[in-house]
Length: 356
Ligand SMILES: [Zn+2]
Image (cartoon, rainbow, N blue to C red; front, side, top):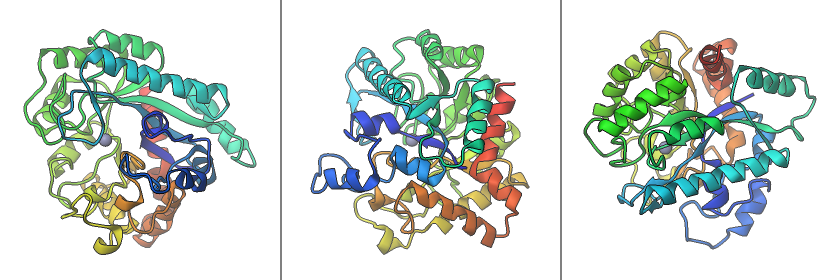
């Protein structure tokens, strides 16, 4: 089993126009020659491929930004109402996948355990639904902080207040400054409702403020180490320690520019840089060294998060290749138990603690 803590499935379905019930080969063929979006013809994720890979459970996002800050290839909307509508469209796609038996929402402890038993007891994953925990990446689309309760009502269980650039509630990657008053109200709502706070994308000021103001469960769904790739998108050792002290699990992303230093988007390639999955293991190992154990690392691949194989490790062709991490971790001296912890049980146990 693999637990992937960060996949933008609905964006791929709706904005990239990918029918994720298709095979990777079909999706690539459909997009051959297209250049309208990053990663065209180079997708790595689909639901059949996730089943083949044993990715039986993931954190799947809703994401719609307000305004285009030129910080991200993700389109920004001119108003919160439009962004909200976009996330509701994304939710509608998840619901359609549920009705088709392709996916199943996991919102509580009972749902988590029954999904894990289903996967453990089935001889083949071929017909099993992929379980997902719904997370909102960037809070811009919440028209008011009170909209978070509505979102909780339809199954939202994690929230990352910011994305790239300055946001409506908080400042994200490449921005600076703390939470505004509405952002602090949103943190209180997040705590009151018992949602998980996703620290990923918070700028340094917001990161430390969030740890101080928010008393609930925290994770970093797709997050590498600044010590290895010096950019504020990554977390410093002090930040990683702060997360570990809070019991967080930190998911390693497969986005090449966050894996090795000096990557220039659209220019550097996996071949020219030599970026491989073993470089991801460097980040995992770094977090383990800070923690003194392997209980705080997981996978948050972010695959097909507005990029394809032009920006992934050279030895990763599809999401199924996440399984190669097992052998690489073993070579690095991790025990069989620690490898399973990193591949899935750390995040599962985080949810068990959160939803006890
Ligand atoms: Zn992200």
